[in-house]
Image (cartoon, rainbow, N blue to C red; front, side, top):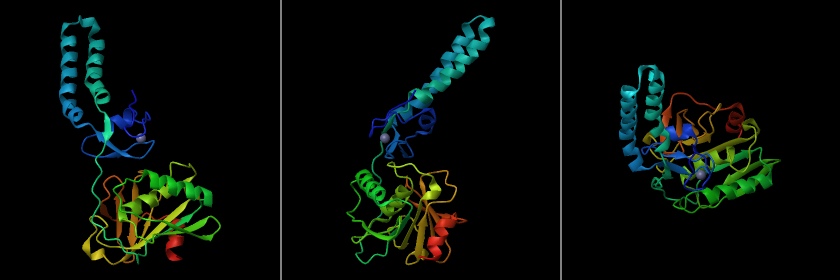
Length: 260
Ligand SMILES: [Zn+2]
C-alpha cells in the first residue's frame, strides 16, 4: 500500500502519510525531506470515489442473503475506505515563493553548533546545500571552531531567513546521521528584519534567538525568542512566523542564549 516519492523514488508514503496527503498543504517526504502534495485531480476524485464505494457496498448489502449481512457491512466499510489509500498520489509541490530579501554583508546571523564532530558537520552542511531548493538566494557558510565539537557558523554574503531557519533545523535533524537529540544543541541568533515572513512589524530590529523546541514532536518547527521576550514559531512547510504564548527553550539552548 506504499507509494513512492516523486523526488527520491523511495516508498516513503505509508497508510498514515497517504491519509494526511492533501492538495492544500505541502508535507515533507520522510526519506528526503522535499515537499510534496496530493495530485489535484486525485484530490477532486476522492469524494466521488468514496461515495461510489459506499454505494456499491450498499447495493451488495441489499442483494445478498440475510445470513451474509455482517460480511456485507464489512465490504461497505472497506469500499468506502479504500479510495483514501488508492487515490492519493504524492507529486512535487511547487516551490513556495520566499519573502523579499535584501542580503546584508554586515548581517549578524550566526548559528552555534554543539555536539557534531568536524567531519560530521562538513557532511551535514554539504547535504543541506545539495537539498536546499535552487531558488534560494546565494549564500556561503563560514565555520569557526570555538572549542571541541563546538562551532560557530556565519554567513558573509547573508542568508535568507527561511533558509537560515531550515539550516538550524537540518543541523539538529540531518538525514546524514541519527543521534540522540540531547547530544546536539543548535542555537541561531540574528537581528530580525522584514524578510522574516509574516513577522509582526514591532519586532523588526530586535535581536532574537532561534532554536528547536524542547520535547519536539513535530520535527518541522523552529522557535524564536526576541530580546523583549516575544515567542514565535515557524513551520518549515509554509515558512511563516506565528506568535506563540510560551517559549520551549531547552536547558542546553538557554545556556547558549545567556552566555553567547
Ligand atoms: Zn523523497
